[in-house]
Image (cartoon, rainbow, N blue to C red; front, top):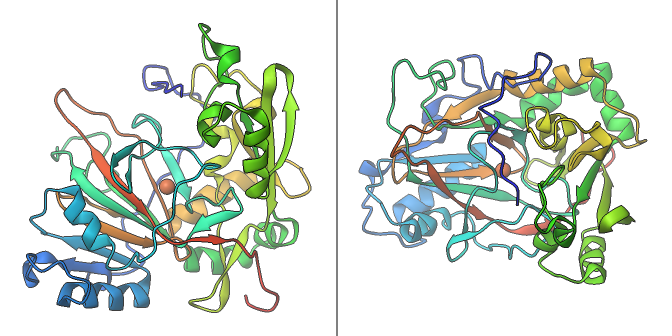
Length: 365
Ligand SMILES: [Fe+2]
């Protein structure tokens, strides 16, 4: 995978960068934070007081941040996350592949120097996940003058945005109703690894061999179709997939539809990537349109980015923290991160129960 450091290049003037939040949290920290010092952290059993408290909190607000755990081992942090995540999914292709750092704990699959727009995990394939957890393995020291600090957020914070609030606001707008009526299409252009052997990886984000875990293009296409992706082949065995779906998803827990798409997979994400930014949107590795293949206008893009920012807040990481995020009720993302010499910022990821998206259910708004 080509990982390109974009920070050495001057940003383009019209790049849409999220603001992440405005300094006010959509819910109070006490509603989603558990302090490990209030629990016996040597008891990590499912039925421990911590496990019980985590599940009750998760049911209420869909977000649990366990702090002051004293844990340093990803395996232990994962055990805590599993208090909520019972059934983990196998990571079997179609999404951005991640390298294992521990069994069933994945690396974040993106360069630190690129910001990650708010998104719901695996919204761009037919099988998604109900829950995602982050495990704070290596965190960053805080610096008062850090340019990466966003309105009081810690360096290296993950941001979450209240998708319930965002949904209700969005549906009161013309843009939201258009999104509801048209749906969205996720376009992906996956390059052929063999076509780039020994060459500069212009336009490369993921080769289909890595995304689908095979060297056989028929197998890759079959796995894509299993994810309900339409597949076409371009020159040089460029694999082009499209996934048409609702911008919303029915959430059984609240018996209502919630916003499930974001602009994380829009071609603009590559506006600052040197080997990709020269390409028109439709030729970039990822792109999004409305479900009738029409482009999302610059005004609509800004409106959508602002929407998640308006309901956003940081999860500030200390070593050993565990964050568990309902993938329906919260979107997540993060600003770009710049490491000083010797610094590391490493979060493990645990994905939860995989499910087939159902889209929206009528009259459940
Ligand atoms: Fe994510």
